Image (tube, rainbow over all chains, first blue to last red; front, side, top):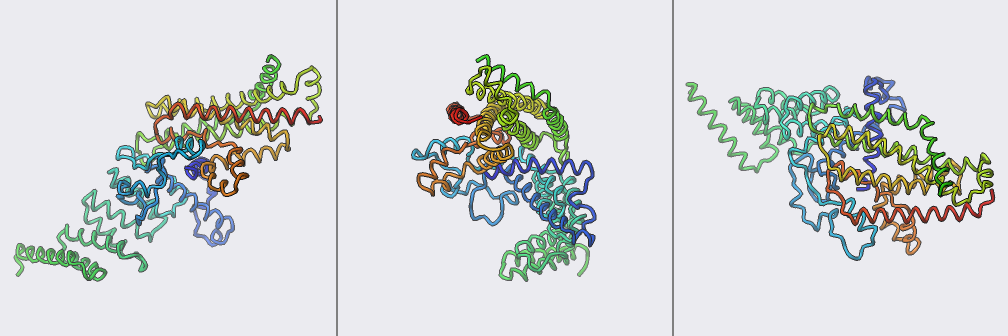
Length: 281
Length: 252
């Protein structure tokens, strides 16, 4: 809660500065033309460049706090934050939920007062209220257009959770302007086209770009996500050859995945049936 | 009491002569209207961001007005030698302190009240509805906070120069607001001294109830509000008593 109040005060000042500068088209943060050599070697650019990233990170964390309804994030062993996935807090036992504790009788009056004022059991916003987190993503990318995480998580929430796929795609495409090689953003756009719009042609285009820019050091889970949806998109448009091609790429990463092997067999059967239907023997 | 009231009224007139409050009201109005009309992703019916930023500005501007004003009062009087005719009236030193404190307090309260009113109007227009009890509790928290802040600043001004007073006041205020809740363990590592320091420092985090309004938590129970009020009253009384004792012994 202390960190939250620190964030709140700092955020107020930062947001006001950002809004004023963006409204007045003041490029104090070197947002435009930051690829020039002068900018790269300028000490103020280097200072403000890092400051922008820090500000964007603070604003992103604000979205996380909003998602938790102002409560602090409990410590648990989930590999990713709640904002990025569907991890509920119900599985976090009260013992592990260090923030929420019943008031002990032996604590002094100040601690009891503090707990009464500032603490609440961890919660998630319901769907109706979850739109409240969105302004912080927009402000984060306004502070630092190179903060990719804000694009992908904001795009996920806007496109998939709130069902505003057109706005989400526009938001993500804006992110691509500044981050043309960000495979995560391509992947997120592909997700929205696949899941929300059922536009498999476009999802293929974006997943292909994501796969093209996927660095080697990215973990297999992320690679699998891209390849799976790419293969599934080809399957939807009945291009079974390409679908099998990408499913086999996943098999190279997970050679013992029997479920995947059955899936490939299933697609091969579909391909065979399709050939029969088309009169190809 | 009349003397105290006259000193306080004289100080209160300052707020309307100076431009600070008008500048802050204008800034707050512009920013609140901008935020109220900002359409993030064209999503309607979201307002928590506006409450957070708006309330943050209300408190920030109030503190910016309160601290330098309170720091200046005693020091200006002493450095300008106007304290002598005042004490020659005769006005007791305790009346001077009480009058100065009340004057700076009312300045803080008036400015905070105006900022908060502006924020409340725009916030409720945007939201359409609100929990009046929450708004009242946040307002009361702010009022009480300013009382303690003014008392602390006046207390520091009796010992330090203007710039030192302002710096120390802001430092103590922000440190305690942000980290006061988590300081208990750190202070308790130093036996006795640490515990004394923990209880002696002003716990501004008790008065900051903004998060309850922003995140729409339930209103605080009565015992909490009464405890906050009681703590603030006791703290302010101790500080003013300390100021009076120090000022009484001070050679002018």
